[in-house]
Length: 277
Image 1 (cartoon, rainbow, N blue to C red):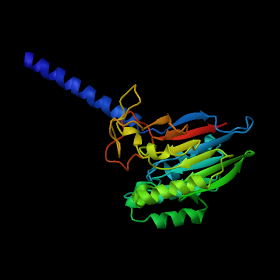
Image 2 (cartoon, rainbow, N blue to C red):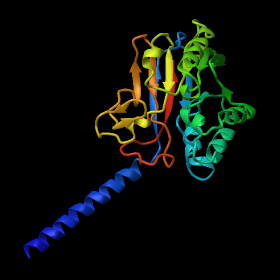
Image 3 (tube, rainbow, N blue to C red):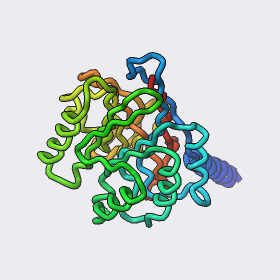
Image 4 (cartoon, one colour):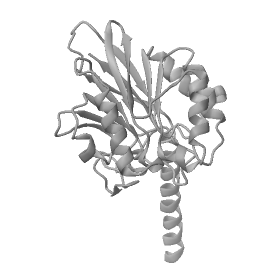
């Protein structure tokens, strides 16, 4: 009789644990917004709202991608910034194309490659498609854009998976040197772990993704379990970091869901909403 009671107790505990795990996983599937206010514009009366979309990996966000697109439209952004892995190397391009074909008709969109575009074996095809619909594809260059009376320099570099590091450094150098020190300078790059490279320059803002916030998040502290190219309990996975150069680097948790074999856990996919002032 005693063994039977222990068995019932163990079954109840196990069932509760399974239910709690599934509930946490379902909650972690819901996309959220994370907001930052950044003082990088000298004119105190000027302001720009940017939405950052990273690591979409062509994942599904409702019929016609409306869950994601409605989240973005609600913010009424002035510009969309995309630091890589918008496409995936395994999932079809459909959801990415649906998303960008909608956004580019409403907002200026800027993009750089991530590693998965190169892993697909089709990076040139993807970049040609983006340029064809009006997305600004940056490859070691900088473009000035005037928004609300403020001129921003949007710089961008390809992911280093597509080239030797010497070529990647050359792209980074070219992007910086083609910017104007009198404008707020924003760098789009995919990799957060290359901080020592970024610190050779004084970009005002660096936007990256790639880390997926460590995939499994440890509740109540800002640490993920494992991030690509950084390993276990990585340093640069989520949120705002002040670099030694004075630059602000913001790491997006990204939007990848079904593209990743391991589920997100305590780690909601996100878009970033940046108010630049």
